[in-house]
Amino acid sequence: MTHPSVVGIDLGTTFSLAAYVENGRPVVVRDVKGVALIPSAISFHDDGTVLVGTAARDRALSDPEHTIFSVKRLMGRTLKDLERELKLIPHQIVEREMEGGRKVLRVDIAGHEHTPEELSALILAEVRKRAGNPTKAVITVPAYFDDSQRQATRDAGRIAGLDVLRIVNEPTAAALAYGLDRRGSGTIVVYDLGGGTFDCSILSLSEGVFKVLSTKGDTFLGGDDFDRAIMGVVVKEMGVDLDGAARDPELLQHLRDAAERCKIALSSAESADLVVDLSKSLRERPALLPRYQRTFTRTEFEALIGPYIDRSIDQCRSALRDAGLTIAGVDEVVLVGGSTRIPYVRQRVTEFFKKTPHTDLNPDEVVALGAAVQADILTSGRRDLLLLDVVPLSLGLETLGGVVDKVIHRNTTVPCRATTRYTTAADNQTAILINIYQGERELTRDCRFLGTFKLSGIPPMPAQFAQVDVTFLVDQNGLLTVSATEHRSGAQARVTVQPAHGLTGDEVEALVAESIDNARADFTARRLIELRNKAETDLRHTEKALALAGDRLEARQKEAIAAATVELRSATAGTDLPTLQRAIDVFSEVTNPLAHLVMNEVLRKTLGGTAADALGEKM
Ligand code: ADP
Ligand code: MG
Image (cartoon, rainbow, N blue to C red; front, side, top):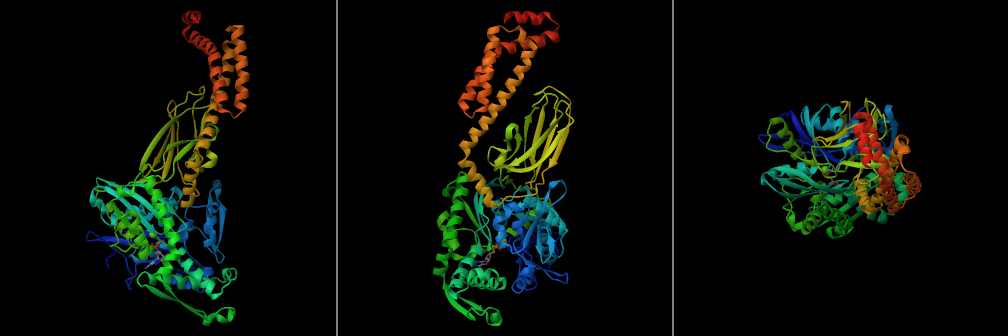
């Protein structure tokens, strides 16, 4: 085999692999036996050796405590994010606080702590080794991966000694592998059912340019569920007590392997036998049958997995809705992920989209093939293709009273840049703290905090005078940089957001769903905060104005202002929007003459008397 210097890598939850372009065609990297898929498993020996891939997976059977799977689920997350994942990963996961309050996740495997980035790097290093040690790579991630998850993936690549040219979305890579860019334009659905996760992404292609229109998924739906469904039947029939089995990882692993083998066999046969042979280890498990055997038919299997496939189709429906499309608007369907080899899955997808999906390429290799194509485009200087993806969740910053002002909206194509102008809230304010948030809701408390930075060096000025432009930039890899410039002084500050946490697809779902459910409540809360802020500002300015020019008001005007002030204060303390709005309107009306007086006062001072006095006479 040739030794490519640049590869595309599919760093999967269950399997990883590499591909490269040879003579203009992408090919996957295979070992001497012709196997391309490397199980994303790692096992640590007490003597310090580390096994990755098949060897590690085989060892899991006899030594589950030293073996870890599904590291991808931990990438870019905090402990708080991982409630559901923790049940899947039989290792202690701790969070260490680093300087600056940044949190780092660590997995304790037999007394040694490893970060998810390091663990993924071990997998990447194995993939790299098999490809003949290339130095550059494009690595794929699910379209819903957020900033910190992408960053963690990039870091893992770096730890594995790779120059990561680009982080590319898996569905985009799949479409590239099928050469769908040559269609010129159209709408492509990518249905990706892997080992532990499901994604449906809708891509649009126009003039050879890809764009992710929407992406929906379930990070707890995949082939593992089908294995567990089969296991459920077996466990019941064998009379295994599941609570007891939970303390018997070896037995569980054994059952899981048998179930997976049976499932895979059912993809090419109408029925398959499942055999569990415990005769060798029976002494420790006296309550169990030594040997269990049973035949599963396809019909039986399809009934078991039907509810999971229903769920995936529901996600497709909602991805279409998000993209503003109907089934009739879909031109191509691409199947990705090992679980789409299941005939029933193909049948259901075909029925739903009323279209025969692309299945010519191996569904578990297609993402790596596309990544190789992308890597080739990047290194060969071919610029006929530009890949575009989207920001999965809105990005914004905190303004007065805990309101999030969205700067970049969800599903905006990357790379993208947006600038909003802000000003200072207080007189002589010389610094602004910029807090960055991610999410669909209106208030900071319902969004995810991404990072913060301070713009200082603003010269003392009256409130509202400073002109601060805050720019959000999301690059091709989906990484966010926020910068701020104050125009009058030229003061500048910037931060590349490197949040120490991520979101699960479920959470993204939940955030979006929540934001729809709560849109009305959010709107009211936001409006209330805005009106209160306005009232506070009006009251403060009026107080200042009264000190400056109050003595020139008529007694009647002064009384009206005093009364309106009391009204406004009490309305601000309440939560009734119309009352507050009315109080603000009244206040503004009665303070109008005062505003004019102040204006004249200022003019008189600056212009030197006469002209302003003349203006004053007109009032
Ligand atoms: P990842 O989640 O890492 O992207 P893959 O796309 O490689 O993983 O999918 C792995 C899943 O595909 C596993 O659950 C595996 O059991 C399943 N799988 C692989 N081949 C078959 C097959 N022939 N029939 C059914 N399931 C399969
Ligand atoms: Mg995959």
